Image 1 (cartoon, protein in one colour):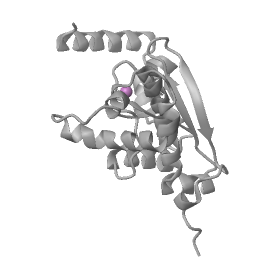
Image 2: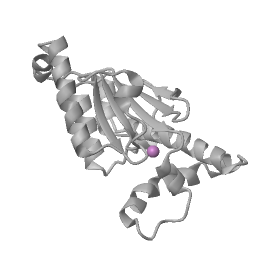
Image 3: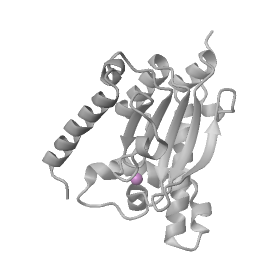
Length: 213
Ligand code: CO
């Protein structure tokens, strides 16, 4: 196992190597950021957004939480979203879940007595399960049922983004961003695209903001 010293040592060598190869690299990065993409992913250590997509520093604005959720009352995710859309004007938002997600798996089990806070976070995934229970339960094995809920969870978060005033206003005034739902395979390294929604696409009427005036 790596120690903290290992990580710091690597960092020194990394910074030295980059500065040697490209003396203006850090100076240029320090001028500011204008990434095109907001990534909303799972905190899982096996799904590093930049590594699996080849994104370089400056290319991706990132928010990660357990089971890649977009919750309307989560000021952390919502403020990341607002900044990414209103200030950075990202062209794409990706919600990326992953097969083998421990958070989604946990949501299909009983609530843990010891993890009272985490339970509250996972309750939304239990709700998504109930919403699609018939379809999910039609699969024979538990693994298949978990995989389907992982996919439904991603799709649900894509829709949750479209239910925000931030996205609806941006779709009206900025003609973007497009919102994509992906699932990453930890066992093969591949991304599976599930859904893309974009300006002009229908939003369930009860989630639409009333026109002003
Ligand atoms: Co996960």
